Length: 458
Ligand SMILES: Nc1ncnc2c1ncn2[C@@H]1O[C@H](COP(=O)(O)OS(=O)(=O)O)[C@@H](OP(=O)(O)O)[C@H]1O
Image (cartoon, rainbow, N blue to C red; front, side, top):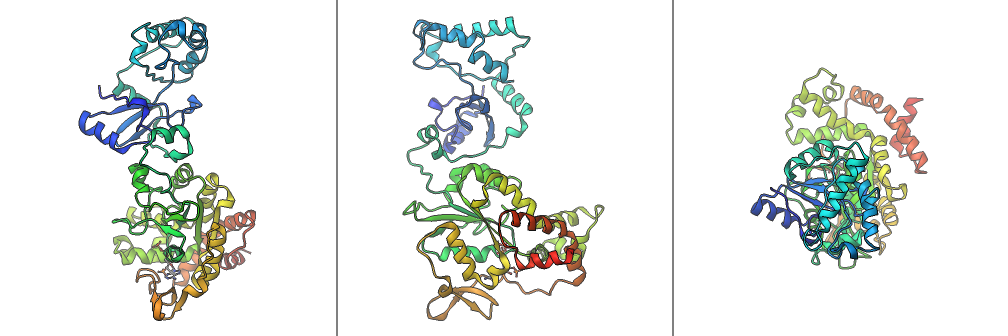
């Protein structure tokens, strides 16, 4: 039938990857169910999800457990069970859920046959007192029906298993929740995030993830499909901290900033994490991003000039429109930050002026340390030096040597042409006004580039 039930819920949620793999490989299981996602109570919030092509349906509780085998010994007396069936909790569970899934123990069908008593009476009562037409389907069809009805539930939303005692208890003894970040550097791209990353890992108490073979220092978990690999995959990128209180694990993925999914997913897994974003003039960001695409030999970026990309109209070729969107949308700063603020309180968010990070990183890093509450205080004025050959601030090594970012950061390219600059000033005007209002509301100073742009509006 392709349906499996895991003993004592273990491994279905929070997900135990090996179980899903064995189900698929050995028994070709397609469906299971759990009471635990996202949480045992209240039952009406239980949802389904699909993980590794296995459909997990939310399961309801009927009041029969291993210790409730005999009618006469039902906790609180048999009347309690009959009450639940006849208009009480069990009745409402079925009335309020379009699809109800129950699992009861074999013992409830043996002995006193309490399972049969419960469900036969429940069906009779429903048929007598409601107009509901009860239907049943085999598991595979039922699961398809479920996700047809609730397509938005297909994507799971992972939570920290240690935030819930039941989840922690049914997870695995070998696993720890200490390998999760205390803060995230979310981008946007081309605003100096790699420099920030380099400076952060210089701090003795700050530890980053290990590199990914595909996306280098970035894990890119919350924004796209890596999320579906599950939290074990994510946690494996992080070291086990030697001291959970004083060590600060973090990751930076510059695509998180404008991702629709990332704030919600991050808030679900690491709700207490601090969030750091760096902003530069969105026009400069767009231009730097375009240059980045050209040096990665993106065919559309090589084919079209910057002005053609930013000014392309609705009837422009698809490749040009796609490139334009990717180039311009991350610069809608206020909208993206508002989305993060839907899920994280303002005191967990730090907005860094990327221009200041570039010219005066030590001051910015002092601010970052204060925001994170990380100790000991690290003296970046001594640890960083301006490298005139690179034209940027770099890490100072022994004997006056420097460790700077590679060629792909701080590229040499011609300045932006005036017509593109004028076009983008207009394009980002409203977004920048919104950003100034947002910063005002948060009680944060306006970066100098934003003040200059706002002067153009007057
Ligand atoms: N110290 C230091 N060293 C090198 N580069 C620095 C530094 N501080 C800020 N910047 C600016 O960072 C820009 C690259 O930004 P990101 O690291 O966020 O780019 S990426 O999204 O990770 O590709 C990069 O953009 P480009 O100048 O367009 O290459 C730099 O201007």
